[in-house]
Image 1 (cartoon, rainbow, N blue to C red):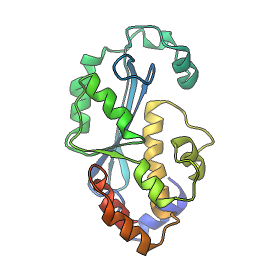
Image 2: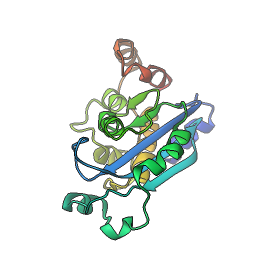
Image 3: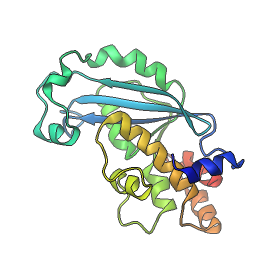
Length: 207
């Protein structure tokens, strides 16, 4: 988290994420939730704008990694020799998520793999793309790669689940205190949010 964000929090500004929120990311062998496998899950639990717990596991894909997955993640087949099968991680993942909302960048991707692989789904999926677009409408792209550069975190996305999950949290903390939208316009746009994106209304109001 940047010094500016920490200064704002310490100055008594209301928490952007009061209570408990989970930020989650997955890595997969491809983009098709019906055919491709989950190979990594990473998540961070945030309470009152601070990371309080982390969850990470590799997942045995049951097949060789695709060249694309190897290139993006830097993982190799050898990294999965002792990795658990997907059913073995379900209870631990369910316990970590609990009843907290889960934030993911392009959350429909994570949600589609969770459903097709019968993983424990959260009560609410929140897509971090929504506040990113609303708070920085001047950007031509709002992918995680672009946003972490904007926030000064690093130059490129890691495509490793735990780091990407924490990057998503830090990006939203940055955007919440460095946004380009006027209060009047933000209030109007926030009021127009409809399910499933209306869960962002409290966050946007706190911005």
